[in-house]
Every structure is written in structure tokens, then in C-alpha cells.
Amino acid sequence: MSRWCEFDSREALDKALAEHLAQRLAQEIRAQGAASLAVSGGSTPKGMFAQLAAQDIPWEQVWVTLVDERWVAPDDADSNERLVRENLLVAHAARARFVGLKTTHAQVSDGLAEATARLAPLPRPITCVVLGMGGDGHTASWFPQAGNLAQLLDPAGKDVLGRCDPVTAPHERITLTLPVVLQSREIIVHITGADKRAVLDEAVDKRYPIAAVTAQTANPATIWWAP
Ligand SMILES: O=C1O[C@H](COP(=O)(O)O)[C@@H](O)[C@H](O)[C@H]1O
Image (cartoon, rainbow, N blue to C red; front, top):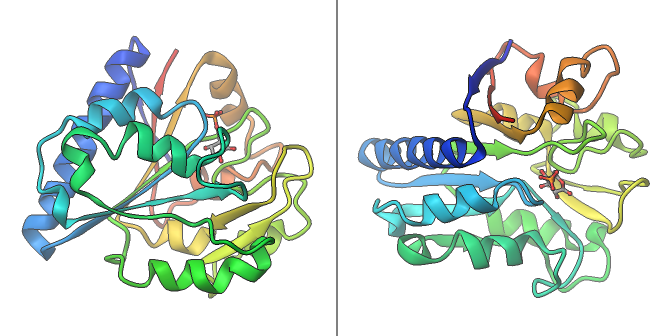
């Protein structure tokens, strides 16, 4: 089951999580010569990204990618790549190697092979995967209403990436699959607010996709939370 790391404020959470990630990445670089980090988009990680970008570690040895991406142009306001470029890949972290998931293909299904090939040089298992969660219990781009949810969440699946039509949210998505997340060295769920805590508390009963991570015991996740 998951372990909780709770903080009094979002600022304290952002700082502590950024310091933790920097330590883990630096430790992996010392041990393996390189490290990898998969981050989520949305609104939650912005403050943490600023704190992480200010950490002085050997970023040249760090590969950064996305847990999921909305199928919009990389300069679109809804692009997770844009969020990461503007908030994480700055200051010290500007030296990191970034792998975006959006290709020039019109549809995700046509871009999956290219995006998967882009990820090939990333050190695997991924050193740290930082997941977010929506109020509907989705994490990564594993949306409750997606027609192919079982395929994305198949622990024995062989695909690194999959497509998702969220149905209840805009934009077609590309997303890491559950096995890739579960194979990572460390899984972090980064959420804020009482509402999201309540969603997580009932995730198993309501069969929300986040439960595929928080209820499994093979590679227990840590939930980093502040009100
Ligand atoms: O659409 C997405 O939403 C989730 C949650 O975002 P938030 O705004 O509630 O923090 C995010 O984890 C995911 O990466 C993103 O594509």
C-alpha cells in the first residue's frame, strides 16, 4: 500500500519534493552515470518545478520526459511540454535532456511509434515517476471513461506508450502505460487539497484508475500531499 508524506502548506510540499527528487537523481547519477525523470502536467506541479529547476545537480546527466501529453502543439497553452519547458527546464535544469511526446502526426495512434523511439535512450527503469491526479480519479492519461483503459492498465502489457480518448476532458492524449510506471525505481503521487485526498480515499471502492498505482504492493507509491 502507499505511504503518505504530508505537509502544512503547498510551498513546503513543493520545496521538500523538489529536494527529494534532486537527491534521488543525483544518487542515481553517482550509481549509474545517468538518471531519468518522468513528470506530469496540469496545474499541480508548477511550484515544485520552479524549486526543482533551482537544484544544482548534474542536470546534463538527467533525462526528463512526460508521464502524459495532450495532443496539442507544443506551444499550446494546454501543452504539458510547454509547462515543463517554461517552469522546469530553466535555471540549473535547463541543462537536462528533454524528450517530448508530441509528434507532428495528426493523431496519437500515428505518432506512437515515433514517440516510443524517442524514449529509447532514456535510462530505464525510470529513476522517478511523478504522477498527478485529476478530480475524476485519473492519473497519467488513464481516464475512467477511456474505451482502452484495460489495455493501458494491463500490468503485463508490452507497450511503453498508449493513446487515450479521455471522453470527459479535452484533447486526445498520449500516456505512459501502467507497467512502465510500475517498473520505475520510485513512484510519487503529487496531489493537493482536501477534495483530491477524498478522491484518493475512495479510489479502490470506485475503481478509479489511480488505484492501479496506489493499491498495488509490488512497487509501493508515496503520496506527497498538502491541503
Ligand atoms: O490532464 C492532466 O491532468 C492531471 C491532473 O492535473 P491537475 O491540473 O489536477 O494537477 C495531470 O496529472 C496530467 O499530467 C494532465 O495531463
